Image (cartoon, rainbow, N blue to C red; front, side):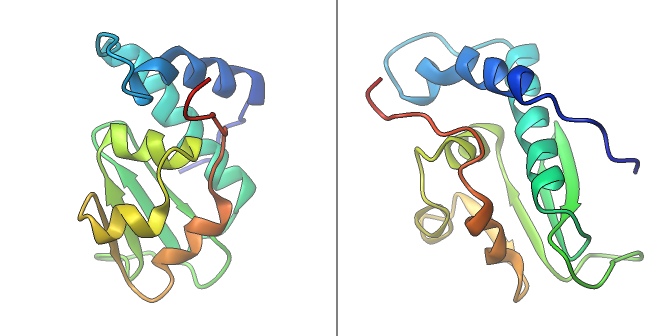
Length: 131
């Protein structure tokens, strides 16, 4: 999969568009297109900031990337996988949820010895919990 260019301003705008929903301030759930833009943008920003192929990050049905320097995975199931739903990913990507807490709560599946390394690349677009 070819790496796509990431426009930080577009990623930030997409995240801000779903920010109130992420904070749980009683606003209606954004539409699929808005959620998709925020997920795809933040996942691509992660891959751009932490280039490599040793960890696969999956946020179905919106995005999957390989990131973190290390051995390239090419066949079968990757040994290091992080998978979660869109809302949980966006909470992680904004710093509203800590990676370890999400794993402990079962909201994130992190398999392999290197999966936890993505935590050092989070948040991608920090949002304050009450702003």
